[in-house]
Figure 1 (cartoon, rainbow, N blue to C red):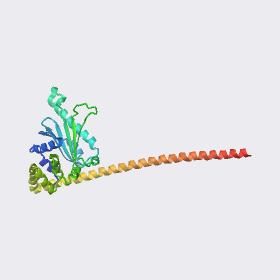
Figure 2 (cartoon, one colour):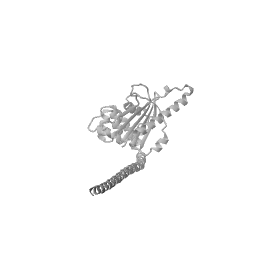
Figure 3 (cartoon, rainbow, N blue to C red):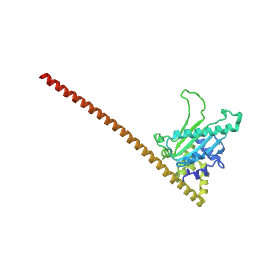
Figure 4 (cartoon, rainbow, N blue to C red):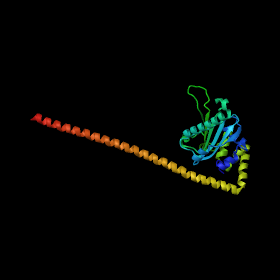
Length: 292
């Protein structure tokens, strides 16, 4: 069972009636103690625009006022850095508007808290494959001078495909490894290893088991997930094919420009050769006249 499917992920990790689960995941990822205060509505426009690759998306407000956005992507979007920066900024602006509206004249920028964008890739973008030994990337903005001010935005990116490769024949040793195993592995032997080392995951698998007992509901969920996946895969393939076509067009244009430059160079050489031949002919005439 693919836990990363939207329906299963939200059922197991639902922060409204089982907040301790998502809190545990956030603690492992952010390496700090967190407590979820409430769930916030998603940006429906973004989800509609990016439905081709976005599997699930959950936004929560933490006890200290910070926001955490957890999203799962089936296949990583192009330009992951630029995209993440845009949506982190959007999340920060949403918080600013909400806090300013609530505080009124008492508003202060100290009331604006951190925003965390956590992206889980089932299949990571090519940029991540340049770091085949790293499966937990975390970033925040800092100054090269050492100036210490909080710019509020933090990013965590987790490529599960790289994690699985790194964990091959390796035991689960940390809470983060346990959570990523839960999210990224469905092999029975890995499930057994996980719940043996971390028994707290038994309850989550029990939730999935209870879901599976309702066969009709699960079949509907699978059918919907597969329908969306098929549609999104086709859209993604079209987008990728268009990128290849655009790339080929650019390469052909560059080759045409190069050929044009070579043609111009040949024309110039021919003109120089013609001038040289005419000069040589003139010298021969002058030499002949001198001999006479």
